[in-house]
Length: 194
Image (cartoon, rainbow, N blue to C red; front, top):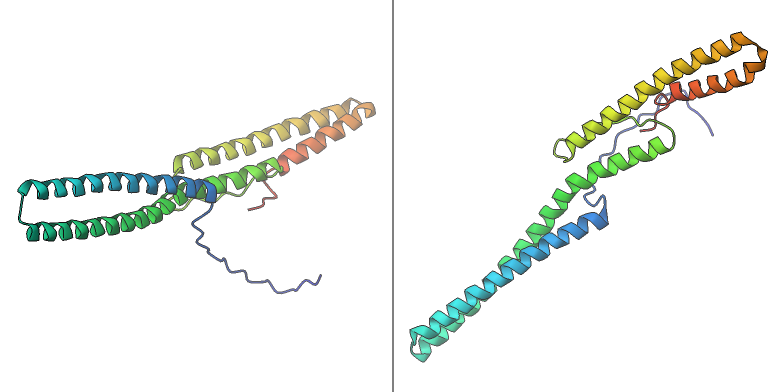
């Protein structure tokens, strides 16, 4: 593996992936579309039914009845077209809205995996339109609190290790273990994977 002396310029590639969590996003978008289509279909059914009943109540001559039936058919086509357009709109809107929730959850999940691996993640702010902003701020405050507490505990451990070494060589091994633990706590958050 060769290393070059010149720094390699890395461009940040911005990708716009709207299906961050397919299962979650498609499930709730599907529910949204299904509810919209069912409600529109039920309302459309009643509109067509009322129109046909009104036409029959007028007791018109057969030629006018045929024209009214044609009109009802045209209304039915318009209603079907409206339901299709509405379903497409609801699908796109549902993906966009769920993306604003799934994105932050995806980022927080990544950070939690990094914590489980023993490192503190280098956080970045959420995008302007993302949901869960307050939750993310609370998460960031928790990370800072853990880092601060680790630093305090590392200092206490280092002091205890120094005192143990001063007491005699028989405690040197235990003091070494405390020094190692203190070093791990101090390092938590320094070697950060983003």
